[in-house]
Image 1 (tube, protein in one colour):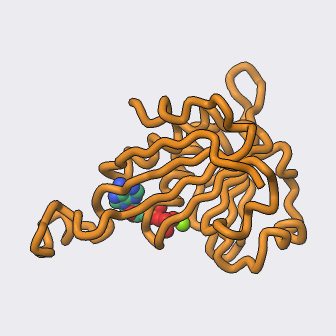
Image 2: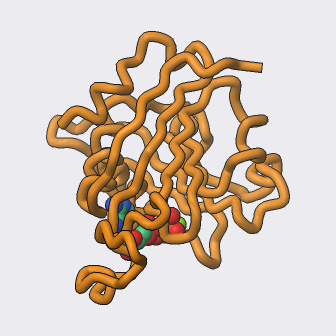
Image 3: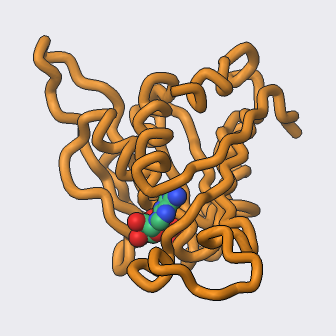
Amino acid sequence: MSDVVVRTETDLPDAEATRALGAALAGVLRAGDLVILTGDLGAGKTTLTQGLGAALGVRGHVASPTFIVAREHPPLPRDDGSRGPALVHVDAYRLGGLDELDVLDLDTSLDESVTVVEWGRGLAEALTDDRLEIDLERPRGAAGGALDGAATADDEADPGAGTRHAVLRGVGQRWAGVDLAALTRS
Ligand SMILES: Nc1ncnc2c1ncn2[C@@H]1O[C@H](COP(=O)(O)OP(=O)(O)O)[C@@H](O)[C@H]1O
Ligand SMILES: [Mg+2]
């Protein structure tokens, strides 16, 4: 059993901020890393992964893996010809267990990828000793700051709008000494 070695939290006022956190993660994540995203439907798990994919420079559009449980995004060559890690984006919602990942027949091995698992809590831990857990929460009753629950104009335009609260936890020796808080200082 590995322990949480680093922890930080931050508010994400809008989807752009969530994407920016994903992009910042590209600076610390490397091949072999596992990220477990937890949060309700619409919390921003895919939005964060989109920011990560764009900053890693991988091929393909990062979307909710609806019909496929895992999507592979190979790295695009950088200006100097080098390539970073691939992104493997998994929706564990319909997976019985992450050992089922083995039977998914991925072309990319997890060793050469950054693997992001949505709904992975309780499933993905068996994959590696080390992982980065990110929880995204929508503070209840905080939408538009309307204390009486009345919908604001913003709510009507986009019922999903609003601040998310993110908690990041690095578990295992991989994360010892990694300055996660730096990711949330923009
Ligand atoms: N602060 C925020 N962070 C992330 N997404 C937000 C935020 N505010 C509004 N949104 C919107 O909420 C939706 C989140 O959807 P998505 O990322 O697919 O969630 P999930 O993958 O967790 O189900 C998007 O439409 C996004 O534009
Ligand atoms: Mg999603």
